[in-house]
Length: 459
Image (tube, rainbow, N blue to C red; front, side):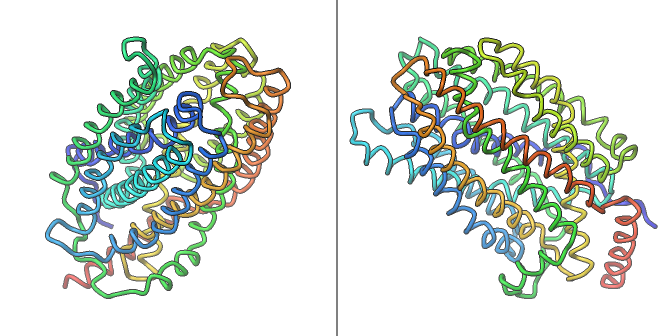
């Protein structure tokens, strides 16, 4: 068997720079909308929840079509890069403009502005993320080195998260006058990063299979065929269970962190988030040389099992670390589970190229965009509902944005709404992880068959 293809380190790093744009596009939506529009603009958490849900549903519906189109589009720039370019340009504009709503506008006008901007932003994010990741699936055929490719991307993603972790903290600085003015300046800086980082893979990366999939395939038939790949179905179930737990917790985590753990001090929580971003970068940087050796030692299957086991353990003890008035104890939980979280993320991403190889063996087509889109579709549809539920849960708990401190009964409800689902669904994900079948022996056999087929095609 020939030595598996792996792109040069230069190519991998230049492709991975795009992850910084990916992070900045998602940061506004995931980390800033809820706190800014509830505590600064004063919108109801329910309305903000709807504004977080509807874009996810819209994008989830669009994702399979965009992913399929990126698989079958043929231009002199390749299949993926035109989509990456368009998403980066429009996304940068939306990142800046979405914060220019006024406090003096009627609630309906504020909500409409937020909703339209959120839909545009999330579509740009989804398109960029899918096509950029799909481009990266081609960078290595090696079972172990695929984890290295993911690890390098995570370094640049985490590098952006250093700035992202401090974004809300920076917006709160007195020099801006108020957090609304602050977030507008911060967003301008984020937009510059989106433009620059988004352009790098467009300008310097070339595709290995630019002429793949010349035959037109019906999208509905293609979508159905993805569900015949058993490892992919298991991966969908894993992500589904994981997202139910972490997203329900995440929907109320800001309020638990600020009003319970930090006793109403937003600045302290955002400061710790900034430290968390720095720690995440250092961890991802350390994993780059260790990624392939860890994969060779554990294998992706056991790496996923260990990762989900640690996530389940972390969910069980999180309530103990999230004690009211003990923010640094809360932060220590993040540091303790940061290594296993990073390893799990790395392995979950690294199995996707293996799944695409399995599909190519069965279908004869390269459909990285479609598989990435289906994964994104399930995740976003699930997250959209959870974001809405989160808004209702916060309201049902009795949260009042006009109070600097929330009543004790409100904090108890918020903690229950966050911690219990996290524990239950993390346990479900851990149970499912034992059925993942992707071993190196299995994928070596798949690659050998693909190489034989490609050599016959060339000859």
